[in-house]
Length: 242
Ligand code: URA
Image (tube, rainbow, N blue to C red; front, side, top):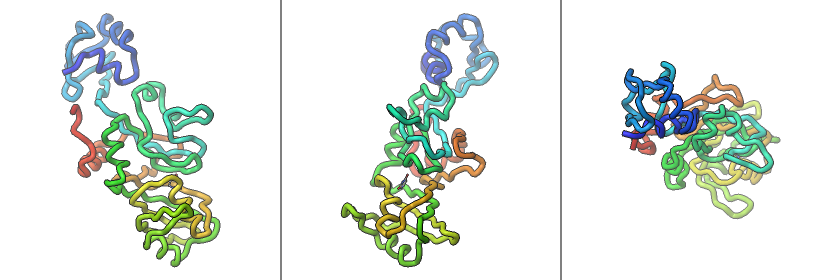
């Protein structure tokens, strides 16, 4: 059980002061009963908390799938460039969301935003080898020799030896690359090492998550229960309320 004002203000929609005022005006109910005080206790997971009759989602953590467009940086703040957070409504910019991993400014596709630090840590841990699949277009077409080089684990210009990666040729100058690690500019550096610079890069999957085709670049939605469950199956999300 937690204080009602703390729960409601953690949604980013209202400050503690505003919550106090809403409660004073009788606009907040908990399980159908008007709240009497900001200090009333409620249960994030079990209680039906409403403001003006609208049920307010009060999960401790938020998980957002974003179709990142080109031109935004994968960060929470940047002195010069607009960040991916600028695509979210104001209240979601105030609840500590951050991108779980980075896509380059010119890379598009699936980006997970969350305020669940432990989950992000697990997903990004080099030990977990969470797979990521990208659609890539290169200046010159990738071929069977590149497939073998990716499979064998190639060495980059700086001497880094990559883990074996899957390269599937798709025709028409496109290929799918699946990485089991995530080093800085990795795909660009791998393709450059083959003499075939990347001209377009889009992330399609991140662990068990697949980019929702209904999301246009710049659009986002919360993960479905099933998607969250799929992260659970990998033992990377702790139960709600922990
Ligand atoms: N590899 C890259 O080179 N860039 C990205 O944004 C992601 C993977």
